[in-house]
Amino acid sequence: MAYRHPMRWAGIVMASCALVACVLPRSTESPVHTFVLAIEEPAREASIPVAQPRVHGVLVLGLPLAEAGFDQPRIAYLQRPYEVNYYATHVWVDAPPRMLVPMLVRSLETTGLWRAVVPTPTAVRGEYRLDTSGVMVQQEFFQQPSRTRVRLRAQLLELKEQRVLGVRSFEALEPAPTEDAYGGVLAANRAVTTVLGSLNDWVASCLQGSGKDVC
Image (cartoon, rainbow, N blue to C red):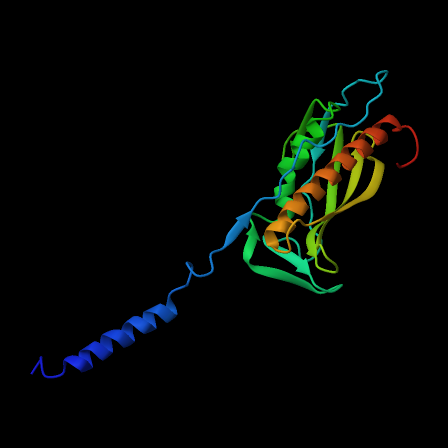
């Protein structure tokens, strides 16, 4: 009796296989590509006058805060103003603000202005604190080639007197070499390098004019 309906059993096996194929994720057909945000080349050192080579103690680096919609690893792009989309299979290894932390530390250390640059959370009581907010990284397809925009806002504090030395927004826009997510990543790395170099110069100018108004 078990051998009278071989076609019926073959049909059941094939149906089961088809059902499993539908349920299992098709990772081989659409693999996820993961990217890092990185300094393309060492950020420019701030111009420090020879007459004032002193080190300004310890700088505490606050955790960068994201612009709304950018505190996640999904890579953002815009095809028209104000409408944010995200690549389906291309992501950052972490949210841009968190990837920015080690880059900020390394970049600020290159200036020679600090005895140490210490990110929060920390028990270290520094002489200065740098907070960044409004961190945004997005690829814009408003024209060809597309361009990647990196933006953040920085605030430098002198901690002993609880005094704001300066507040400024930084932004860089770089063309993408290719019209895809990878091209956007390459442009983002160039843009973040430019932003960090400008940030270094601004911090140096704030320290030089620390007795004046907010820089």
